[in-house]
Length: 239
Image 1 (cartoon, rainbow, N blue to C red):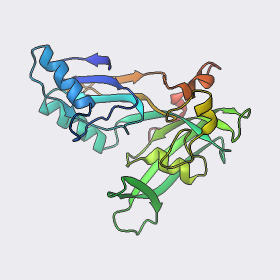
Image 2: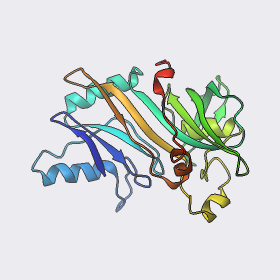
Image 3: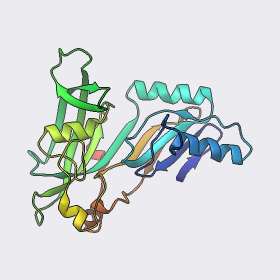
Image 4: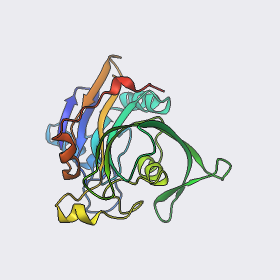
């Protein structure tokens, strides 16, 4: 666990791939428990307010409140769409355009813990929207792979994974929504090709802009990052 920022009101840290943000499963590590233990060891009140989540196999930046007031303020920003969340993804297959906006309606199936694209009038269907831009394409493998930058405009269950699979370009290594990439396993590049690499919001008390960035550490990204990929987030619109 890498802490990027901490003060009296909040903690921002990197969730490693493979660790849940929060879980009810006995004996399984999660970020909330790790941070509570961290605060307890420092002699602090071990309160940790969960603001947003990442899928267990996803690496990325998470923000947590250190008291109820900051947690409520951060949650309000999240609900109003004022969290700017940018991801890097590795997709498999030919992307239909260099950049675009995806608008779908997703329905979560609780029993299977999967989501699917459905119609807007389907009961419990929720609007899911994102903007994507292709940064690099590797045509040396079949199917081709792409490094894609994504800005989430909504935050739905498995949203990026479902929408990219529905587009016909599932994420590399996604065993739930796309066939596993056997060639990646052979090359030692296993893991889900998704990382929450940038997060921006207002400090819940000081009201100043807080922006955090990381580079993905999963092996599936390395051939792109070594080629000098950059994340030019200023080209994305906020909404």
